[in-house]
Length: 302
Length: 302
Image (tube, rainbow over all chains, first blue to last red):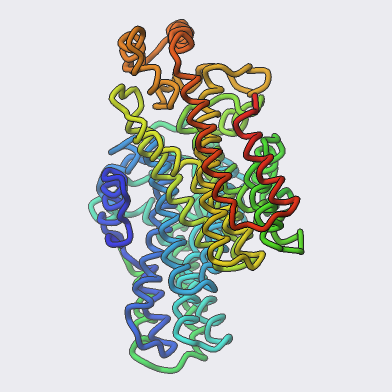
């Protein structure tokens, strides 16, 4: 990634490196590489290049998300627009998108289509999410639509690209895409649950950040359905501006409902379903790794 | 363009249409269509599709530029982030980039490379421009580098895509690309001169906007070299915040130098050079139209 993110402008290069060097789980490249290998691909340099492209596009979207959410901390470090400026961060995000597209186009034009589709869905998902901020009537269905666009479509694109480049059959490409899509849904649900229950030391961000922003996440949606505490949580969620102390109060209320348990059940159910899609993929140690990756998604604490 | 900008989200669709329906000179599609025709292309639907993609990417970059420059008026209408919100405008810009890439990819993968290269240069140009705001030591060379990235590379990509899709020879594609690139430089110089001398009724924006933002444009660079008024203009340009009345004062000072004349001479020289590149392109009414387009670029008042 660092090799691809070299610009004529020193500071632009530095900013992009700041973003990609801050770690992260690298799930998208992992999905791409394992899907490539599981479908019989033999040249590891190909999925590494594609995986980098996906991670770069993902990082670009995080830059713009952080601006939109006024996020200050990401992965335990200052967000890019806080460390530099909003202006430069918008441009750096655009440049990273471009580098991602360029990298993919340099491998194979077909896979540009996958990422373009995913990027479009990411924008739409972000939009619907914004529209549902502080909106207590948001449904589980709305939420699934949002996270499909925001997260799952890119997971799907990573896996499909890997499989396609390995020369996978049409069935293999589609099936591994469905696996990755539903894994992405589960991943996002767990991410949103960690916003309620996570340890900031592990997650690299303060607890309750989504609540503070009024994001319509599944833990809140389920908690708002609670017979005892639902009404109070709805009232707090609807407030256009919520104080830190009310966030703490809301987190406490949510933890008294069965919301987190329901979220984790839903995530596990999605992962089980995702694993069942892997049937047509031949047995191999890469397929085993894909399964481990899927289990990690629901068992992680960061 | 309107047909391509349809999203599942109604407001997102509305925002994108707001941007592309606000007019503009449509120079980029014109360059693409004429380059296609001048190189022997016969199916008008192809360059129309490509031209739309370029105009969409261009519009996307304007959305982000307006956010970065805190612009409030564009083409006589409120800028997108003022009419909607900053958040939604960032996302709408990203979505429009994606639609542009998708449109191009649907025509031919090769031309995705042209726009990716141009988009990267646009980001870099914007970055270097930001770095040189209020910087009185900025040189004409810096400026040419900035506008090559910001404007000329996209002009080049439009023309090259048209020529390539028409089955133009490698020489034709390159030569028409050089023509368009230098036309883009001239276009931007005239644009920057209009910021000093233009009639807001024609240009759709207040005079002196670039000055207010401390943008390092050629009219300012030349004016700062003036023996009589240069020192005062430099001092005004260096102020991190400049009042409206000082903008008016600076505009008056600039008009007392030969700066605008030098800018227009430079633009005309670039257009003459650009026209000379058209030599290898066979004579046709489309080539004549390309020449008219080039003359319009320096003779316009909007």
